[in-house]
Length: 400
Ligand SMILES: Cc1cc2nc3c(=O)[nH]c(=O)nc-3n(C[C@H](O)[C@H](O)[C@H](O)COP(=O)(O)OP(=O)(O)OC[C@H]3O[C@@H](n4cnc5c(N)ncnc54)[C@H](O)[C@@H]3O)c2cc1C
Image 1 (cartoon, rainbow, N blue to C red):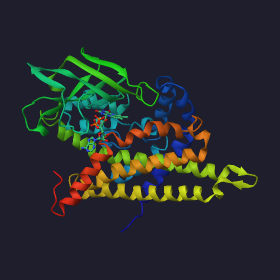
Image 2 (image 1 turned 30 degrees about the vertical axis):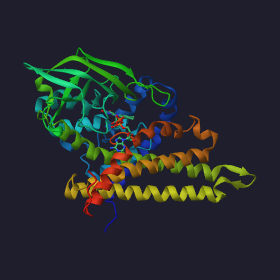
Image 3 (image 1 turned 180 degrees about the vertical axis):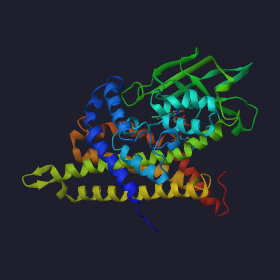
Image 4 (image 1 turned 135 degrees about the vertical axis):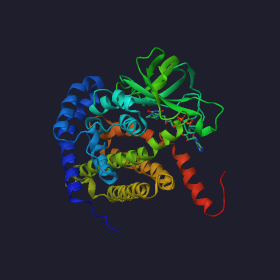
């Protein structure tokens, strides 16, 4: 087994780490104080720098203006970008746009790619993905209410969604809708592109989360669709393929989330170590001299390294055997890495004492914002169920 990383990848990762540390960390103080819209001029300036450095949309094929990174390279780059909450945005690799770019590349018609994908890739517009509903369990994605009924050359959409991240200010939504309620569960839904200025698309509110409603890209919206009409050409892929497209988006998406969480964990461990090594708890005695602190550092180091190896292995298995064969590994990392990240953030806050819960460091932002990691893209319990089901199957036991 060869764990070495190609030299050109090491160089690229070092360049990106340097950019994040020198250009993006200094924005974080403003990020904690200003609204996202107020920060946009500074973000645009940094985005322009990324373009000039030739690092724009690193996850996208070269034919579409990206760096054409393979899985391993992308995973390692994503870890570096995640060291700051603004990293992915500044490189145009942020959720939910990155996922929408992927599905438009794979399933979009040439006309859809020209109209929707091109401006996304250029960073001229943003988008959102509207699937979860307040009155149906997001953990059971084949059970949805929002309907699209065909009327001549249009779909008419009616329904209620929420937690549509980044809908505020987005140019369009990719909406998951039931097109055939009588079809088999996995063939009932479709994905349709809905421009947000379509009559009947109503952004009800940015949902306050952990004390902050946020705005623009940094928000999660409740949305109603009321007789919202779009041309049939806005259907993404085949009618009834909505679930399959969502799966193709969520599988690699979970790997991307996990690498992001590893980047966050690394940043928090670094802050924890710096604090432990510099904070005097008595004359001539540093916090790092205490064994309990050393153990938190050791556990964090070990758990982060284990997480990275598990994620890289899951990605390797997807590449070798396909997403279906890697379902156990993908579910394992989804709940394991989120748990490691939350523990590392919590330890880092503890080591900082009162400063840890203040907004003077980035730790409080991570603590507030990343708790959701154990819920979105499948709650912990659902992924544990997947792992247990597949393990027990080998022993002739069916959990269903
Ligand atoms: C910050 C954030 C951003 C999000 N962004 C988006 C987005 O951009 N677009 C979008 O469409 N959605 C988004 N979501 C929604 C997310 O995908 C759902 O919250 C998630 O799928 C869970 O669905 P639910 O909230 O309806 O919880 P439910 O399905 O009601 O589940 C509630 C709880 O029940 C338990 N549970 C559920 N099923 C089982 C089971 N089978 N076995 C045991 N326990 C179970 C779990 O503990 C779960 O947390 C986002 C959510 C958050 C928090």
